Image 1: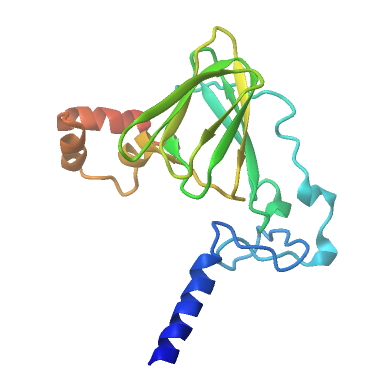
Image 2: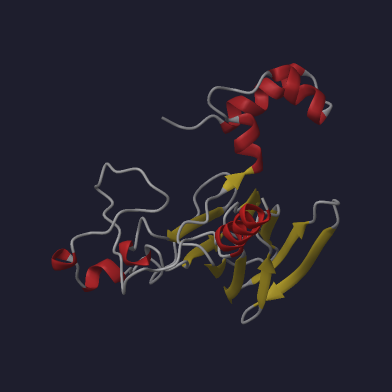
Length: 217
């Protein structure tokens, strides 16, 4: 019994002590085969004979994007879906462009910590701890702020001119859950009564918010 218990503890330590958000490499590279129908944690590797420099290249940050939407911000992701060579490397980035007054609404990244580097402009940024404490700061060009993994956070351009940041993640695919869209634009929808009680508003107001956040077809 003692030997079995020791074996169990050793196995538990090996499995959980070495676990990461993204799996470690078992070879030099594992370029994602995005067309594969195989479902797994990550992506299967392409045949090494078919890979090339373009699997590790992305030009999407070269020019600012125009955030022509209701919130006034636009995210350009550089994750494994855009750069297949990131598969198993445990990193990704994004660029966010903001109109004057634009907001990247409260959201979370369930699989990664995020670092934000300001390219242009001045932003108010912040995150909320699980005890509902707001940690916020105004940051400007050349400065960095960190959003811990899984915590709700946001950014707002407080300047009169466009702003832009580059962000870095410790995951090839950090995932994003926008709080408003997650709750009010879920499919199937969350019961109005649940949202009404949670936000202390009436069901007609819930319906109005759902209509505003309903995905465009």
